[in-house]
Structure formats: C-alpha cells, structure tokens
Image (cartoon, rainbow, N blue to C red; front, side, top):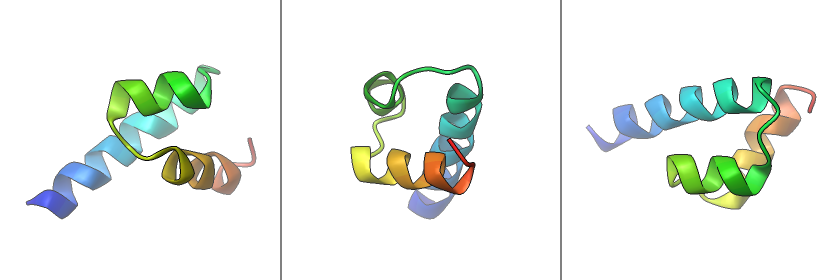
Length: 46
C-alpha cells in the first residue's frame, strides 16, 4: 500500500514538474523528499 501511494505521489510530481512548479513547491505539495523530486525532474530532462 505504501509503495502504491508513493508511486501516485511520483506521478503527481511529474505533472507538477510539467507545469513548471519549483522543486520546493512540488516537495510541499506531494510530501516527497527533495532528493526524490530532483531525481524525477532529472529523469524527465528538467
């Protein structure tokens, strides 16, 4: 269950990255660690 919730948050983070929110805003909105959001952004080429 926790894994599913984390994957969902990662998908939300990807959508927020696409609309150019800052890493800090995405971290606050999703509750994901900053490093994880940065990793997702890097994987997306942002």
